[in-house]
Image 1 (cartoon, protein in one colour):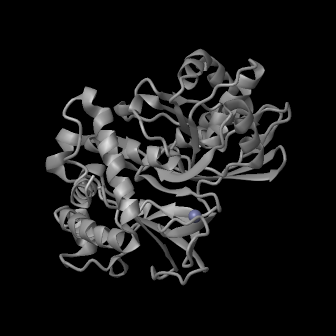
Image 2 (spheres, helix red, strand yellow):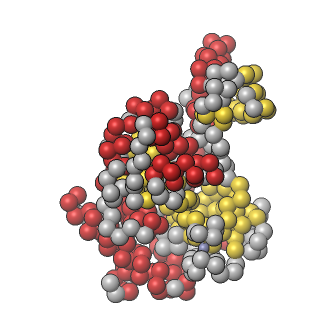
Image 3 (cartoon, protein in one colour):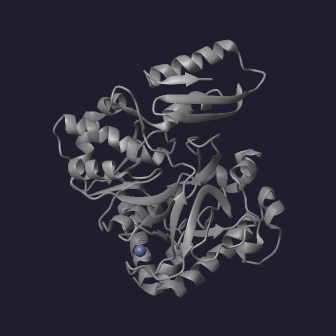
Length: 411
Ligand SMILES: [Zn+2]
């Protein structure tokens, strides 16, 4: 592929979408080739690409009042001069008011964050970007002939995106893993499968496979959303016969970066800009820790510009020993960092299961905090609303005790 065509595909991913489902793998390949061309073109070429895409994003966002009020009418592309936008800023207005209305009806898929770290944020994703997302995932794995149907997604919360229907599994417990065991086994055993999900959800599946003495061999295994413990890493290598790779992703912005063999995360520069900033929103010097902000160059329907995603990182300025010329950073603290919690009977539980009890009752709770004070002891602090009742409290305690038998919860 020549560089001019690559540049066009990278800049206007919405245009390069399959007109028919049967052509999708062809378009995934097109996006993959464009990404490969960008890799060869070098850092300066990609910086210029980012600048052009940013101009386009800002002028599109300026048509949406929510964004115009924040970023103004300026043509400046200095990100640093724009304000930081938090999840709370966005939650204050309806998702339609943060979106390009004309495009919404035709191409938008309503979705939301999982709510694992607080109240879910609703927004729209662009149906036309399916092939691009899959191409990014494929690039991380180095797989060349890749189709969407090769994906198997394993997460703890439901994903309303219809693009993944039939390949998306919501798994929070050994029971749910067992329920889907046969279907998962059939899908993962195909030679071209890529498994993608949350380590603790995949852990549930791996445990069932171990009990059934099955070694499934997907071509690749990508994990995200929480730290990959050495225990999970070893289990996955044994059960799936492949080395897991961590990536930095979100519902809002898809694949943002991935971990290299030297433990650094490399920015997915064609589609996102990642900043590490101090309390004033100014870029941190290399080596200093700060808040991670993300700008989604593809997010034309629901823009995310200098969006504070809730994680902390450190920017590296020296070249990565792995040889990649993509900007690199380390994640030092994650809002979503959550290791599985051990129960008395030897099982583990995901923190999402506990937070779900409270997230489902947002009308009755203004805020809550779960403090894991000792191995099997939890203290829950709540700020109730006027809808809070003793009956609701008893229901919540009953659910918590059912989820984590033998643990003590004080409210
Ligand atoms: Zn590297």
